[in-house]
Length: 361
Image 1 (cartoon, rainbow, N blue to C red):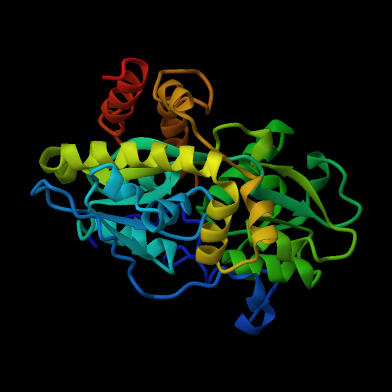
Image 2 (cartoon, rainbow, N blue to C red):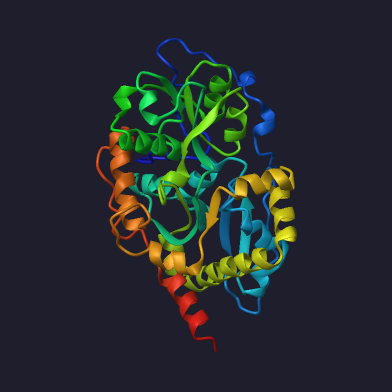
């Protein structure tokens, strides 16, 4: 697609997984333990959200991340239908495919990170963030071998991460906090699964990965978490993102979709066992394993949503975070100019929901 830059994906980014260490680090697919991949099917999940209106359906994409599995709950428990939200829910085995499908305008909405959205906008896509699903609060980690006790100890060490991803971004934030730069480490650009495998094989000293690859990396004896997204609030945020065309043509459906999201969060609170059963099944993991992942993801309340859309001077403000992400894209060479994020955020839908909650009819 002309002008489309490589996204800051949670899974394989286009054209980046062939970059290896200059020292000759060579890995094969067989090095990666397939058990740690979230198992999915390729079937679309179309919700029977029939309503009395003639509103056209919202085509909503989502993929494997704890903050997005509540969409499956909304479908299975009939919440879309209850809220009058006509939704065609589409599951993507590959996160990148969901991003490219939204960028191509083949779906109306997608669940994706702020970094990926800024990257898409840098490539010319007209996309709008209308809802904060969650913040990563520990599911993205920098994991190190025994003997590394502080971020400063990474100087001169081999560190693997998927270039241009949110975990690469997290790594750079940690280095900056310790007064280091990317030039102070031997960086190896590897696809996330291969990066984790390289770490377990003892071929790198540290790795930046997200769940479930964190589980794989921690299988190296004496390995440990050095820092995580929990230490950088707001650094990795996940969102409901819609096309500008959908905003213009389907505002009622988007409002109903936002309403359904918050109704789903209410359901999860009061029916946790059932909700975890649904989400673990969609993830292809046991309920106990899913709970471990869910603990590292903070689902945003309506109050937290309203606050996130406000201006601020740290990463908890979406406006500030988007500007920071734009500079990151330049720094890692994924774009030459900072993307225009002036029209990236639209909080009218969360505001409308909040107003109705405060003043019920």
